[in-house]
Length: 258
Image (cartoon, rainbow, N blue to C red; front, side):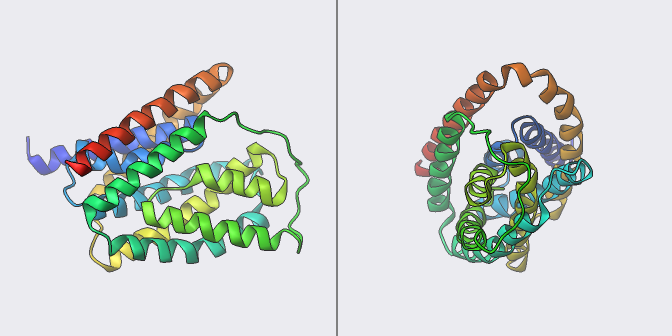
């Protein structure tokens, strides 16, 4: 088989896995995109892998956002303010990441994966209000939280949903379900900002991104019914997924140091 076609096929499979995990668990799945691109698809430059990951995550988030918006779960004013300040942070974070050596960047990335895995082990707080409306008192918290999360998202090239969701809940008091739906606005915005910043430096492999997007559509379609079936076992499934992320974090760190 043509090596390039094989690489694109592996990118489709990787996009399917990432989108499937995002659909089932609502966050954390995007952190596996970079390791998949590096060690499965065969992307050699960590910066190119992070740029492609950011673009793929953004496209997948837009697909998921369309469904959540039709269901009326997105709180647009709160989500938009959070995303607006986060875009500035994502631009700063991705610019800093581009200036760091690729192997050193992967060590930081492994640390971020460990944080994601540990965060997923904590019980999800579901209480909150479904009647949330943006108020002047919420603005400072949304701005500060959005900028910080955006910077982390841009630096690591991940969606950042595991940080966006608690940030929205803390700043607005909305429910977990509403925060998960509203977080997709920021995931899409931060990913697009990071991807465009990397593209400006020629660090995006667009065929790889396109292949991941194709796989992402299939992953979303498979993940939706699977998420319903796992609803009664969600805590156990989430812990197993968190364990997988921690194992991959160790692997990335060892490869980066080696």
